[in-house]
Image 1: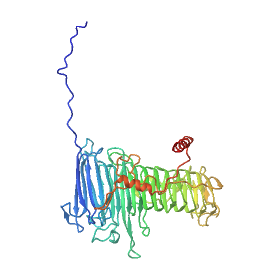
Image 2 (image 1 turned 135 degrees about the vertical axis):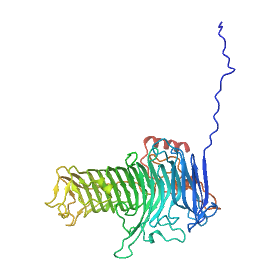
Image 3 (image 1 turned 180 degrees about the horizontal axis):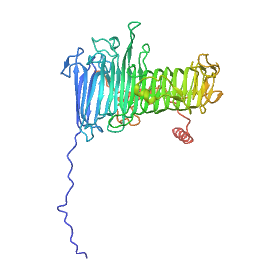
Image 4 (image 1 turned 30 degrees about the horizontal axis):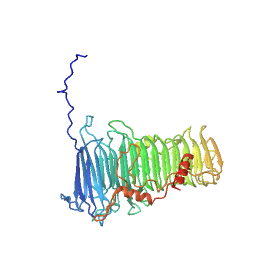
Length: 539
């Protein structure tokens, strides 16, 4: 029998429950001039302020009075949890869009050198950047300024053609108006931008000696840009833009963050529809570039190279300058385009005719200097080692040149005895149709490929299958690599006041029901057996 004394449990300490936690939240409700009502809510740490104005610019202090949004100011947010969430309810005479002139951010406290942090996400899909006020000076327009960074910025987009009541449209004020979105380096993970649309415009010169003006949209990102996603990029093709800064159009630029030295890179440029007057630049590389619709005046600059380029409806009126290309696929052909590559090109597939295209590999471009100086090169020389490993064209070649490490004659005609053909250039090409070049392009009309080694074949070519609209899962919340999860569905409710509200999930189901089915591959043996079993059971 044990004589051990039993331990007393009378004073055994118990764990004390922590006090309840409350999620901080600030909310603002307002009404737009056309009757749309909206709610803005900051979930998490921090606070924000909304400044309202009338159409004439007079300050409005009563949020129940219909007004325009001048500024949304965010302060003290947490870079890992805080979200600004916005929802719009369309009024009987409204358009379901709420315009604002500025978003500003003041960071919360941090231990780093800057002493500030940014915000985790801004999710306001039906709020648009537009000229709701006169601006601080002629030629300036609205802006989004988040110096301490945001992981995901999701809003309706930018519309330079929006005009507040009683104001002069920007494309009629004889000024180069620029909307800017300046995003600093975020606390972690890089930056993602998701919009519905960017709309730019321009004004033709008033006289033969005058100059056209451009109303532009500039997205400037410090450090890595994970995703830039838009449904469409619209512009005025009658007022041509230029490739470099100040030239108009919609511009997406990823550059090095100066304080930290984090270089600018782009993970994915994704435009589901058409892209007009669209410029993409980085001082490093682009992993994936996709336009599902037509291109019209497109510029791409990536000194570090471009991995994959995809074009749903062909490559038209484009200028691409890059260090290398792994693959380029266009469901249709190419027209009036210039692609220049420092080194090698992997696989290129055009699903139609190629007309008035210059595709050059093995060229000294000094791409870093082009990016820094924002000027086109005045003199480019061929360099050894350029190649186009596999070129497939499911159509004809018309007034076009494909060259690898070849410098043409002084009059820029290929195929003469004045060509400088470097020893390691290679092109392997297959053309389904014919070749027809004028004597101003090549010395021989039936020749389009120029390199030290050219392997050319004829025969059928299967066009690529780059995804085009309609896309699967319409209305689903935006998602992607390093995009903040939990964003609102794309078909955010914008129901008419007084009518029956439609939930976001119901809108998604309705959109899916009206969308063409996505083709599926052949069923596996296991799936076929399961289908037979279901049929037998039901019978």
